Length: 145
Image (cartoon, helix red, strand yellow):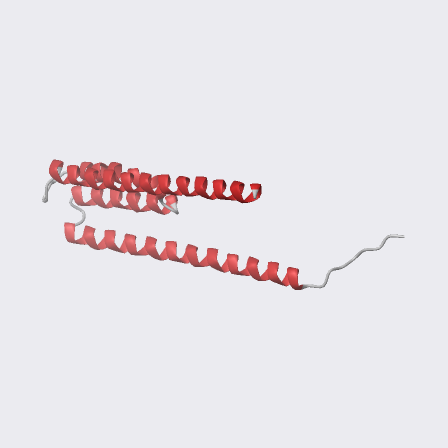
């Protein structure tokens, strides 16, 4: 009976941690959206200062970085956006070309995230199969004389 109480306590505490994390993620996502809205006000459509606009958006997006699965891909995306913003501001790229390149970068990052997720699942499946095979194998008893 005592063990059951301990298990129930652990489960309830674990649930509290998950609920708190989920609530924090939602708060950070709301903060990011508010940041994006502020950037739209500060840098309205057609603004010429693309670098500062991108910095504003990057700062807003940083609110969710701790919750991203692959923070390196998050960083890569925003670094790519910074390069694109510099090119547009310098007149080396049109806004339409920038949108196309940013969309391609986002697609590439989504593909890389999917590749990593599938690789992780594959490794997990191999580990499970190996553990099952090990558990199913006959026990070996070593007798020392």
